[in-house]
Length: 340
Ligand SMILES: NC(=O)c1ccc[n+]([C@@H]2O[C@H](COP(=O)([O-])OP(=O)(O)OC[C@H]3O[C@@H](n4cnc5c(N)ncnc54)[C@H](OP(=O)(O)O)[C@@H]3O)[C@@H](O)[C@H]2O)c1
Figure (cartoon, protein in one colour):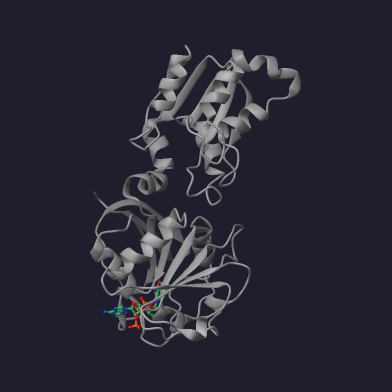
């Protein structure tokens, strides 16, 4: 099962809003083949594992045990049900880590297999299996993207200065930041960050795809000369309370915010409807604080730097469970998870 998790992780950054899943076929205690879900809409891990069995060993499939990190699906989505494949291939022993988090279908895939006389074992390394699909579970249960907040702060707790760009973190931390961007489906920033820092919001210092750029500019001040609006083949979602004619471009999709509902709720709704599973919020502090107040975030990643900035815009305060601490040079990166 640990090998299934390793394989599943290779899909992170490519499969969301689907979950990362890995599968291994084992014959007489040796790995016959393995597979993982590689891209959104592509074959599931079980299909990959079965397809990867060499032709001369296909007769061993019915004699093998299938390990999968997530309960096999039993409904037709973008691909046919994996339970049908397992039944058709004659596999008699299936072992999974965790159940499908969707309460409407959880356990149904396993029931379908058991009805066919297949031996099913569930709950192997379950907490690790659940951890792997955390964003997916949030999407399914809470009907919103999984939300990661990320900011850098000085040793005195400041995140920036109004109207003036201050680079707080070490140059090497940029690689880590870009790896985070590569694992998200979308990246959100506020208008003042665009005006002050003029970020591109793309992935350059790490292999991976760039996320969808989401710009929050309630008062419609921005114009296309900022890097974040570059037309580099990726579309941009622009949220404003007023129509901003200077941003009428084919690659920029404008969403007008209604005064009757909270802005952030409206943004989340649009993103979720557009299959954004993981949203990274890169600032600035005003936007981050607003999101923390709504209690609609999942993880905060704080880059605690040694920079001496002692005035300006205070970094957000966040309470939660510490999940990780790591160092990049003199920067300490702290991961915090919301409790509840
Ligand atoms: N350290 C870091 O990791 C980091 C990351 C990003 C940015 N920054 C720094 O943060 C600064 C910009 O951050 P910021 O917090 O000023 O702005 P921001 O979060 O980038 O933008 C705030 C957005 O929220 C809107 N807004 C709505 N109500 C607001 C309210 N009551 N107060 C403030 N904004 C409100 C603003 O609209 P209006 O502007 O139209 O009012 C703006 O679009 C820059 O100095 C930048 O360098 C630091």
